[in-house]
Length: 88
Image (cartoon, rainbow, N blue to C red; front, side, top):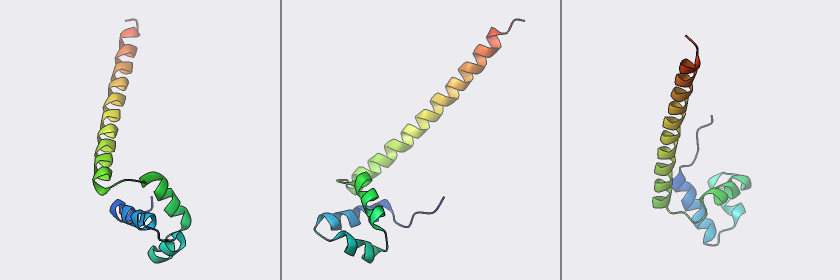
């Protein structure tokens, strides 16, 4: 996986600059990115503050951890059911 060139804070700053009235082409030239990157960022981070982004990242991490716990429990349940269903 390619390393990210911009942090989320930098992305939000670029989007705020674009919302203030700067042209997309000028922003892309200034920061060395493509138009597609700008519009992808806008779709993902539009209207967010840095604090909102930190909360989102924390919630995503917690969600990932909880999903892993559920997956492990489902695997344990499946294994136990297989063991109990066998005729000894």
